[in-house]
Length: 125
Image 1 (tube, helix red, strand yellow):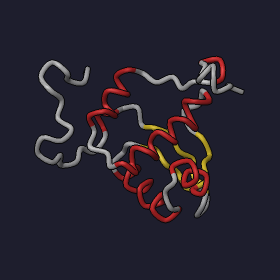
Image 2 (spheres, helix red, strand yellow):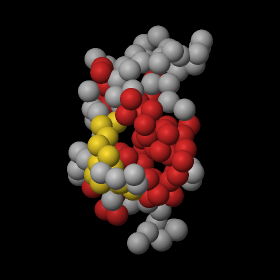
Image 3 (cartoon, one colour):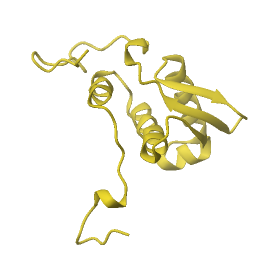
Image 4 (cartoon, helix red, strand yellow):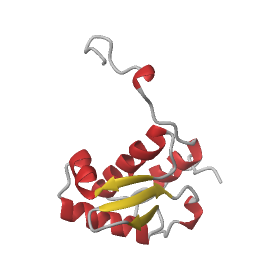
């Protein structure tokens, strides 16, 4: 385990993600709760070298400090927007993974001036 004096170390685990995918996440108009859930799913999948994982709503709720009800609602929205691939196993358990084909994500209306990349900082194709 990491001691406070040494700080986080890569040998204690890391999450590998493609730059283009991270850039797409940065400019997509996620709410705070959606971004927390997306990061939790990425941690639970890519963090373990997997594309998908069986996840419990309660587990994601605890990881993100969101209520289980709100967690479930946000997961449904992320799946509807094609950001997450989600297959329900039961009411509390789902197989989930990030849809890495970000060009298929359903783009939402972006509030004026929010989330728009500055000139020269566009997302790579």
